[in-house]
Image 1 (tube, rainbow, N blue to C red):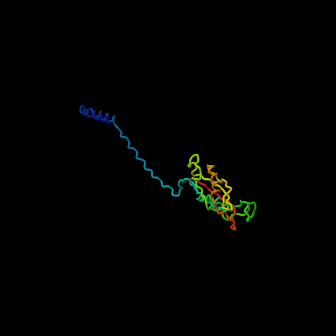
Image 2 (image 1 turned 60 degrees about the vertical axis):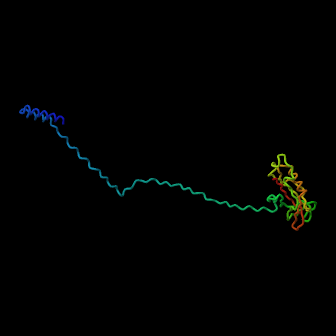
Amino acid sequence: MIVLAHAAALYGLARALVPDVTASAVAQVVSAFSVSEPPPPPPPPPPEIPSEPDRGAAGDPGREAVARPVAVPSPKIEVRRDPPAPRAASTGIASLSGAAAAGEGTGAGGEGEGTGSGTGGDGRGSGAAATRPVLVSGTIDNARDFPVPSGGRAARRGTQVIVRVTVGTDGRARDCAVYRASPDPEADRITCQLVETRLRFRPATDAEGRPVPAPFYWRQQWF
């Protein structure tokens, strides 16, 4: 464009100064500066039309199925518990289950005062007591009848001793022995002495109602 502007300016100047000469010269100059127009750009390619998928073709393969693990809870098994067997009447120490200071044992009798045997004798026979000895008189005071220990009464408070005696047919206790000792041996010895000298019993009887010797357990507890 700049070249054409310069050519036009020269052409005008020549026409003004030398009108006759410039006709041929202008033709030469114009021919020298002929500009050819560039060819038009090619048309854009036609848009692509997507082809329709084949309706009968197979689809893409799916993901492989994986089985989910299933946790089965363990079944509850109830264990059958048999009820405890009842306690035999001929065993154990009945005096320990009561709240009273004195109790009655359930052991079988058999210790007597003679040397005979059998259900009719009063020696070491095989006859068992059908009833137990019963305390009928006498008491033991847990504070007054025992000396104060070296550590004071608090040292013995809350403890107990259990002694075993044989109640004869006359209702008196003898042959005392410590069945379960307390922390105070002197108090245990005094307990045995007081049971034999102070307590009186109704003796046990056999199946025919006759008095028979039988064991008796005394529990002395200090408060």
